[in-house]
Image 1 (cartoon, rainbow, N blue to C red):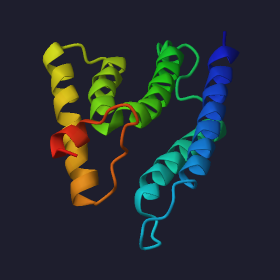
Image 2 (image 1 turned 60 degrees about the vertical axis):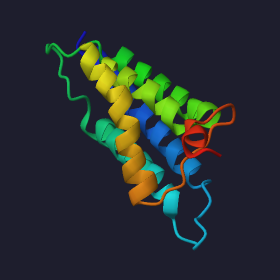
Image 3 (image 1 turned 135 degrees about the horizontal axis):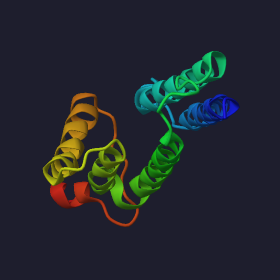
Length: 158
């Protein structure tokens, strides 16, 4: 029993390193903006680097949950969050930013223990709006458009 948390922690660290490295490589495939600057790729690069560093820290330091503590059950949530992230990226390309974020934000909060319907509804409404204002309006990042449908087209009348 004493080795199980250490092995699990190392496994999670390895998975984080692989996901972070994959995110870094994938973000380098995002083209530079029209001025030759990093533009939209800077955020996925930072996120991928953060995931990679977190995984390396987990591999280096070992698990934060020591044998005998009551911290089990996180592996399923980590895997669920990874699946949600993959589904979110896929949904972005199919239904655009607004719909995919409105669905994914409350699901992510639900994974972290938010259960009140008003909180989940607020996340579904406020997260897409707040992120849209920050990234696409204030920072000028081009929003990902949906292949099947995109609410931004309907809202803007395109």
